[in-house]
Length: 240
Image (cartoon, rainbow, N blue to C red; front, side, top):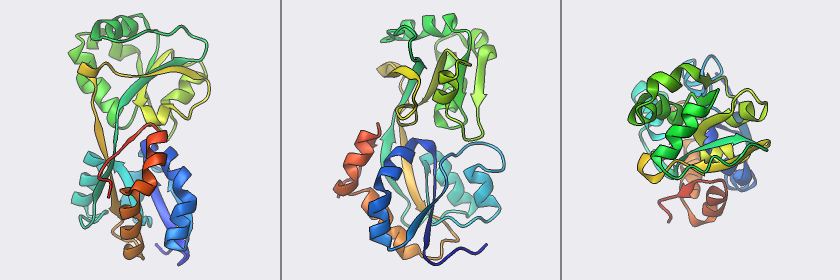
């Protein structure tokens, strides 16, 4: 699949989207190319990052959770060369704007809030997998809460569905919740329940300008990119 020589094509999951969008002017200056945002969701279905990569869509850089990137490397759609952890992310929860603060500080607080909720949302990415396969079981309420929990896929954010009033509680990476209007009380999971995820950047196997991608990955791990990453709700790592 061909691509314009003056384009730099980016596939990033939602967790890194806010930081990435802030950094676009610097990325264009660094690469000398027009930054093209192919997708901002790992998502599900035909438009998801895995599906796009599998069918050979051109991606210069891919930025996703570490487990997903390592799978892409195993699949041969992303190169192992220069794959780099650039940020850490925590899982948070939110409620609709105007709803009372659930005041969740402990596991017992979270257990009570989930049992009281009528509809709970979770994403198709790392936070959703953690909620459905670990957290609900760890709290001892999987049988009660999973039947009223809804997977939000297709690139839509959990917070957006909460804001529409279709959910009264939802989980996602904090950096994906923060930009959403119409939600409130965005809070990290209690420390003893938190799952910190690494986010990695890698070179698309069919990138036509791999040297440019190496420069971008180095920049994303630099002090110059750290503020945008921090402001988005992520923790920058590997500063050089």
